Length: 406
Image 1 (spheres, rainbow, N blue to C red):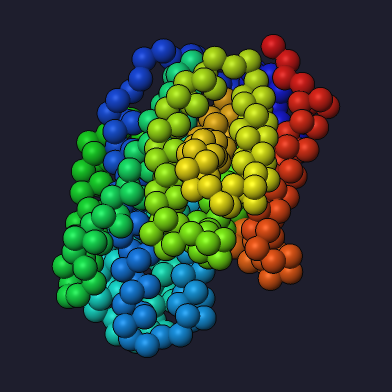
Image 2: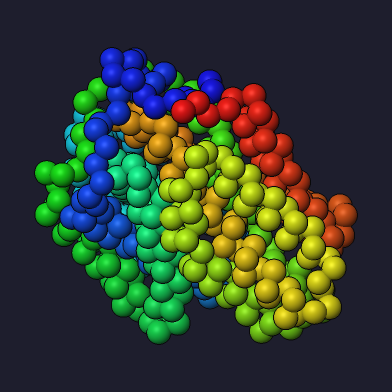
């Protein structure tokens, strides 16, 4: 299905152009704090848990292949849980499902310490990441529903910044707590549980899903393709790039320390650019234009990597802007989604949005790794160019053949 091209009209059917609420210029801070607390806690928990579990598995002598397979359960869990999240929120309420997901995430976080059988870590991973996926979907739905239409980009920029801070603070906590004993697991569980407090305070403001989405889940993947394709590319490039960039950088001739600093520069760009990009998107007639520009920057930056391999400073400058634009695909894509849909359709489309991100996190590392095996070192850059090139072609085609009507 195509992007809805004009503002939704009252009385329209779900899946085409659902009714939109009257524009609200004020920001509902209680709702936004609740949703952002949930997503910030998820970011910290994942940022702490990923290196913690990998180090523990390494200490137990588990092979790299099995460590990678266990880590891949995160993407599998996201793809499995996403289609059911909206239905559960419709039946039991948005805030109730979020609190239940918080309890499941905290319990499974502690479970990794108490369960010694490695095979049981696979279902634990699915429970943990399935629960955090539900929190992602419903937090984003809540934020999109509560954000004033004229300030949606700003609000989602703040959301993305909070998430980035969460992911950054997770590894910092890991460096302070280490991997021994129950303390890191307990701290992670407590952080997740604390996020339930603002949700409970704001539960009466949580958005309701009054009816089930009438479209099949996969139809929502294609309902606003410019948004869902953006988050697919973001997932592929972010996870694939972060996973394999240290290998690319060290093979290029940089030291491990220099490679780590380059990753830090990318993270700084991610943090710095989200609010400005969100605010910029609020002033654009068609957010797809900004998405196309950011994808072009991503394509140009990736294509330039082989030319910058002997100059660390130039590569750092490019990666600063490149990291911000890549992450901006998520923020502006989510804002574009919220500007097109409301109600049950928005909740279902948010689930499809996270589903596409999960697919990207699985496809990206595989494609980039294979490209490096086939084409050598430059395969890293060309694989990323391929992802961005596909998105640029799609977004430009959408703007040409489906121009936004005012």
